[in-house]
Length: 300
Image 1 (cartoon, rainbow, N blue to C red):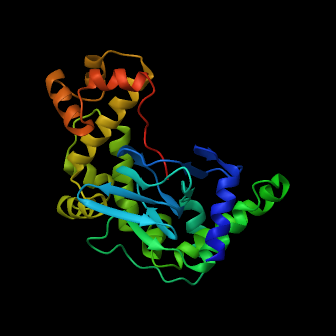
Image 2: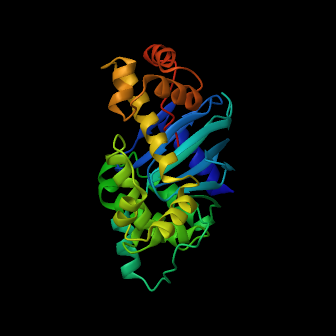
């Protein structure tokens, strides 16, 4: 497909190795010349298109693999394990990523006569689709503007809207529409997720979270698991451990103090759960992080 080849060429022109931002806030390009280890990170609502290579993304027990011409939609903040498994120096992994802006999505829905469907039971906040030609064309035209800063300032937001519209009307449109609907099930769960992320060190009660989401406790629990593939307590533990690792990288505290700061009462429990999640004790992982031999995994 000519447009996908053009996207590959444009990403290669603007990146060498790693991830870069573009003049349009929330738009990033990725180029990796080798496969990566499994990398853990919290992904915010994102559209990520693979132009070359392939990646595996894991959320709980849900495993998705996607390659050139396919895209990932993340519709709520999710702790994800990502791994690029197809990349080389001659054919690097190339990807385009764009944050999904709820305000712009809501505006598009208000301006259109698009049907609004509710979140279906069992639908996770993480889905893969195949990019239609009109979506690829929109991405290619946005990438063509990167070198033309004056044009980008005016036309970039217009092309962002076009890309969002193509997503809204595409095969993963249900997931994207939910981001812009304040009263959707996904938005209700998203409010609870934001509460957990802001209060991860506190004791968590399902009844309190259900009130934040404006649901009954059983309904909230069912929909939370459907969106995130995990229970609220499992989600909170994941966020605690992700935050602990970020603090270890910042070099500000010792291991025990970090465990207490993220909500653990027992250093041994913190060490045990950290080892289970990241594959090594926090002290050993901290030494590795501080030598720069680990990544936070935020590649599209």
